Picture 1 (tube, rainbow, N blue to C red):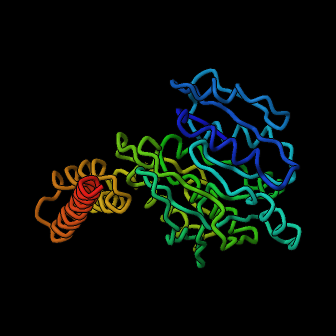
Picture 2: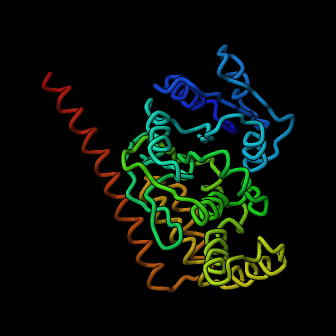
Length: 317
C-alpha cells in the first residue's frame, strides 16, 4: 500500500485490510513523503501484521510500489491504494481462486467507483487486455510471486504519468492465465488529487495511446519499443500526438465527459476550456459542452428541489 497525502482516507484503507476474513497476510505500507498527516496516522497503528517502509522524500507511486513488491515475502502479492478500500472477504475470495486453479497467475475483482461526493456506483467499464476484456480495477489485482519474479514491477518509463498498470497487466496476461472475480470486492475512489485527475503534465493525456501502441507491437512482433529500450521512438510518437491539436482536443473532451459522469464539474470545466482553446468549432466539442451544461443543470435543479422539499416539510411540521 503506497500512500501519498491520504489522511482523509488512510484509516478506512488500512482498516479494510486488517479486518479481512483471511488472516495470513502481511501489510506493507510506505508513506511517500506526504505533506499531510498520513504518516502520523499510519504509525499510530500497533499491529504485528503491519510493516512500514516510509520514504524519506517523495519518489513517486511507481518506485514506491516496486520497492514494496521487492520487500514482500508472501507467495501471493496483492495491492491496494491508500485512498481505496476492500470488502472484508476480498483476500479470502482471491486466495480461493488460486487454490482452485494451479495455472492461475493473476486474479482481479469487480469493483465500485466512489465519486467525489461519496456516491458509490458499480463499475461497468472494461479493462482491456489484448483479445479479451476483464471488468476489473487494476488496483484489485493479486498475483503469484513467480509472476512478479518473471515480469518484474511497474515500468519506470511511466513514472508520475499514467497507464503504467495497464501495460503491466497486459504483460502479465500475455504470459499467464488471469481471471476476474465478478463480485465487486474493491472500492476505487475518484480522488480529484490522484494522478489520473491531475493534468499539469500534458504527457498524461497520451499515455493510454502509447500503451495501445506498445500492445499492438507486442501482438504483431512479440516485443515493443519499451522492452527493446528504444525510448527515443516512444518520445517521438508522443511528440507527434501532442502536435495534433484536434486529437489533443478530443482527449480533453473525453476527460471532460468522464469528469461529468463523476459529478466533478470543476474538473470537467478545466478540461473543456483546454479543449476549446485547441479546437473551438468541432461538432464533438459542441456535444461535450451540451452534455456538461445539461448534466450540470440537472444537478442544480435536483439540489433546489431537495431544498424546497426541506422547506415545505419544515413548514408543515
